[in-house]
Length: 262
Image (tube, rainbow, N blue to C red; front, top):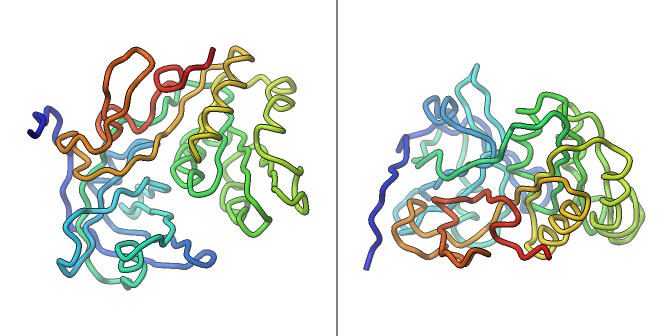
């Protein structure tokens, strides 16, 4: 039984690939000219990319990493994890790609001094937030090694400060982002924490933010079949007992909606 779709995507458009670049092994940045989507997109939203050639029935959900209103382009930073994303990475500049979006609800931008916290590919949608806050935000990023923190150079022009942690301690501070977070919250006047990454990390960050009485939003990643709230594949239980759909009601939620922070 398919649920009723009450909100349709704003744009189902044919985009043209401008650039396709491998940043590190298996991590790619694709920039696509899609003027309507660029105009409508908000930080934290995502799109559904149709993998060309008809071999893949389902689209691939990808967070919006960057928007350039002058060129009418949107950029996506994604990791190759299967046949679909492998096919995406093989596309060349000048080729067309169908984009459905922008979809979902994004992050709150009502903050004077936000802290962005990300790990792994969770740093991709947070990049759009960094540019939207126009230098007001700091970012705390974690990786296993320095190699995984290639994000530092990408974020640096858009934030006040970049803080890094690595598991091996050979770059930045040794440990996880949660090891550094309490010190940052005590030393700065942050009024909002935005986080995206592995769920266990997001829950831990949200708990620390709650202990410091700072509101926190999290961006959930779930397998999304349709992206429209119809197939129910991304449904989750919330702390209120309600079932919500990540693609339609999220992917961004207030932390207390989805995590027990008591």
